[in-house]
Image (cartoon, rainbow over the protein chains, first blue to last red):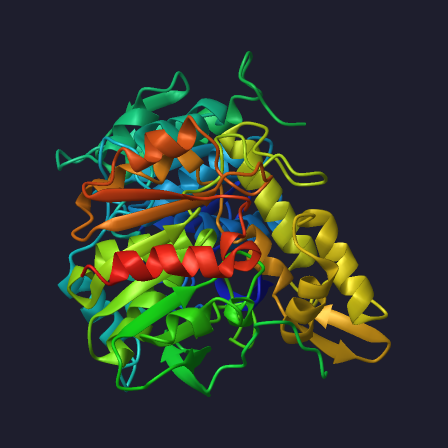
Length: 232
Length: 301
């Protein structure tokens, strides 16, 4: 594990496995950690890096309690800055962050595998800035954030339970991405997921995560795909 | 810094309130037993920007003004998000322990409105002074970043800016308060040099070789790539009346129609008022007229 300075704090990056071939960056779900990818890493021939998001695992909590998918993506982007080109696999919150990264850095993200999981499950069809949580949830969040001893992960992360953006926001990232593979397990899918799925570069993969990883790898080794907009 | 300004009254009391691991500066005027009114300032302003306005409300109320995180004498966070800023206002309301009126200017008007949405039982009435968000393409000020580019390009710009600037501890120093005030005046030409010198004397700190704003430079880029048109639909849920005030003079930092009317159309119980002869900073340009309008509105609670 190494800690990487990102923004004003540090995040933990774990190397779960190493090998020849493309690097996979794994992004866990809300409330999870890099450890969640231990089994999956065995199915990837190359190096597997797994990030603990801020407020989780071995990473710092954000002083002041600001957690948004964009800030998590900024931390993951710090990793990309060092690692170079990767494939990304993310679950739940991590899937949303993987989608943002794939759209922001198409030159560095060959393909993104989106897996179901906790975080960003909700979200509405209409635009709103921050989804107003129930007041009791807000009060619990405020109380828990000052609780001692502190809980396993920062309660302010509840802000990442729902998607505060309209679905066309997610679609803008999907349209800029090189390749998206979505694993669907039959559970409820949030509007942002449906929006990403409708992009030209998106395909639905098998529910078997190992099989989906194989497809991610095959597609990534096929060389540059023609026609997709790609950053230099 | 012995700088004074006509009508400006220093707060009678000051204390810190804890919120989400930060220490926030809270100042107040007026009878501590009176009904509370909480003031929230705009972007790059600070609690002491209410030094001429708050005393007028304090004739009838206990008036409190909060320094937003990253501003004035409040702590700087690791990162910014709108929700955390709103929860700071909620935390101050909880600390007061009794329902309060909220009066917010500009960005502070937006914070007050969203705090009233989250914690309606703690808010009696809400006055929003031209805090209805920027136009869809952003405020068209000289040298100001515009909302240009695709959504992913905007987030890329945020990542790059954050990597390059997050360690920066202050804006460029000015050799004197006068120069600092003059620099600010380029952004706010309607405000007098005399006022801005007073404003700077409370909003800047002295360092070797001059003065720097206390505000965190990172606060400028903390919102992420949100779109102004996402602001108002949630206002349909407001449980209390809103007074919306704006000035009748053109000002770079005010929200003009048609956007103002479109956004305010979401507010269930709305009262509007126009302050004649004022721009975006109506409470500074016309404190007596603005206070009279707000007092009339709050008095009908």
